[in-house]
Image 1 (cartoon, rainbow, N blue to C red):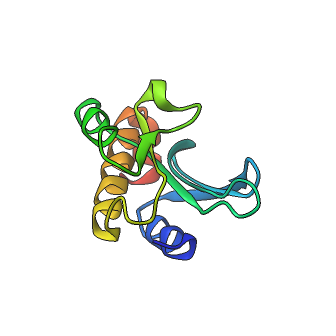
Image 2: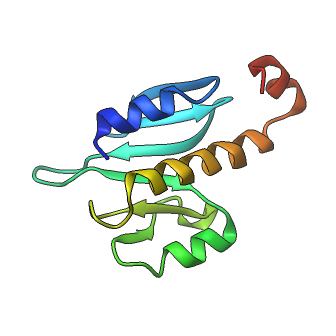
Length: 117
């Protein structure tokens, strides 16, 4: 999944916002809370997609080749896809929808109502 495809997919989820921060990372949020990141660190480095996941998914995904605990976010059960062939685009999209749902459910009732979710 390219960064453009990542951004287009996240943009299609209801009431999301995007900011560019942390060295040109594309950071996607719902209600001000991050659910997915596409980053590119250092010259020659490939892009890496990170997202929030459930406790069980975190345990399973971290055992797969090309997927690792996300730097700085692992304690909150985030994973990072480190190689292009670690996961299909369809699977990435499914996990990003789950990440969106996990974060959205943590928002207050008032914020969810304001966002229409």
